Image 1 (cartoon, helix red, strand yellow):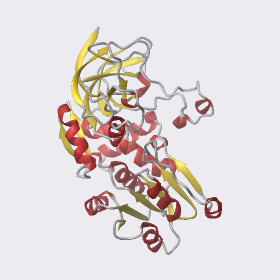
Image 2 (tube, helix red, strand yellow):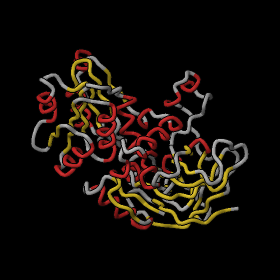
Image 3 (cartoon, helix red, strand yellow):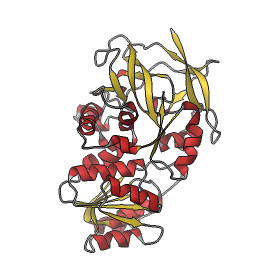
Length: 362
């Protein structure tokens, strides 16, 4: 059986997205059909629309989602119809790749996606964003992309763990290893940066410095746990971070933007032997140059955080539990709830910095 659903499609590089009819097949072996309840509008979707990640148009956008399993294919035991799940884009292979064989599942080099394509009505295969494609009434995913969580969680909040919130939180807690008493600076206070700030607060950081060029975002950062703010449109971010840390620099600096300028700021704003974490997703073009002597002399670690180095089966239920117990306010990331046909206008508000997350509710 094939399901006709409404979904958001990007047909050409830079062209406005549109709601179209998409055909979604019944799940095959190790696949699940999910009725999407909510999906966040992530900057990565805009990267896809602009051709910044790949050129495999047309794209079925959306990936930061929660919903209910409608049907499962042969061999599926992890979830069942009726389960409330958060979707993830790094469904680990569990042992086929060299990372998983070493027990480093969060690095899985062979993540799974659905084998069957979703298509336009004329049969054109769609490329689902991050292997999910959840700006749709229903989507088809590999079963490993479904993580069962407490069904009392609001879908609009829970779905945000599917990408941005998990990426920011994990960049601090997993990749950066921030612990009690540490100092941290977060450059870029969008959704990912705010999640990094919230994660640093939960981890017990003593000093949490938020850096952005938008005064409004800096005020928001304070509500998520920032102890200090730096408006980098008015002052040198590196000097400001050093001044707030006794002249040394922060133990960990997170670049939640992903451009050469902010990466250099992260590199130089860390303490000697400190850690710089890149979690902001760059586009294909930018390059960064650093004096090799500075790389050697400053020591420490330069890390890239893939999805916050998370393990969805471990982290999603734990963070939902923190949310339900009032320790991690996922709902605070939701700036507005919108319909499918409002995604293009949500991209515009995102670019203007007016929202943390617009969330499509179905």
